[in-house]
Length: 410
Image 1 (cartoon, rainbow, N blue to C red):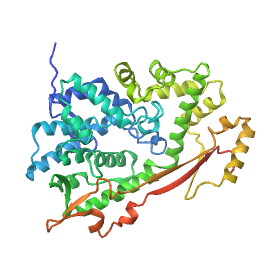
Image 2 (cartoon, one colour):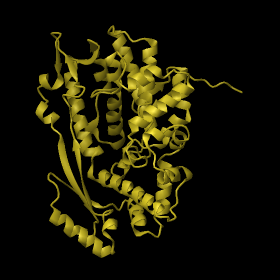
Image 3 (cartoon, helix red, strand yellow):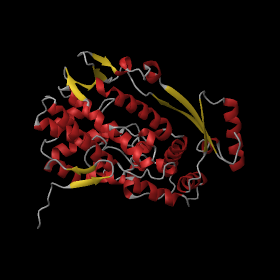
Image 4 (cartoon, rainbow, N blue to C red):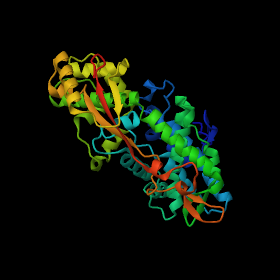
């Protein structure tokens, strides 16, 4: 049997060649838990808005690891002490930070497994892999949990200027074609430093930080919270909810064996051990879309209609508003839809509904971006920038939406 060469490289369209720095990293990437990320969409159903957005969590994880490698090199060059074990921990933590994502990433979060977010599941996966690799991920887990005594190591993986955000902004901008979201990740990394154990950005990198924060704000409203992507995501959630309801009522609804387990079984975080984690590791976008293709022909009007809307991109109409939708207008549309399709109130709720979204560009109180001034002082980025207004950036913007069938007038 020929022994595999573990010093391989990936050709990435964003950064070029990405090397695998160690045999442990190679073995993690080769593990079925990680390979599953090739079948998990990075941006859910955003490809219904931006046709190029078909990239995966696998690509994002590799890109984040690549940026982390650069960050370690820069910090060491500036005299910051990072041991080989700590570097390995950083690379493993950032590589595995999204491994707990379910099908279509955030679209299915808390739906497949109710009340459990992907960070909690990621931690379970990391602990399982730590057993397999004889404790090699212990440092990575402490960093992921933000418990490592060297605070800057935790901040490189999770903060308002971490390697995760640097990669997904640059990558999502590339694949959507939204140039306004592009950032100079390399410049930002070059400007990183550590003061009093905390991650800082040198003052000469202030303009790159400004561009980063504005790009992030733009990407959230223009891409991540785009109204068409939003309604598509809600339809997918409601489709799964309808299938779960029908199954609970004893109706026959096609599912793969893996998906069938999760729609028939209520799973909480404490249940994520042994067989459950193995089953979740087999669940991906393919299970959902193959089911939706079958459900379009189901005799239940609600399930079949929702499935056809997603498959054929015949989505509900959606309006975004600055204020909550008036109840009189909502009730009028609700009644119209109910009567036209002869639905019950419960069935109509799948087609006429409201909700809200919110976004904060920068949280000055939570893991602030600290700038190392030329005079040696440390300041919050919003205080020294002549382009950023701390009140504007720190304000949580809330928008309200209403969805309803296109063949009616709201």
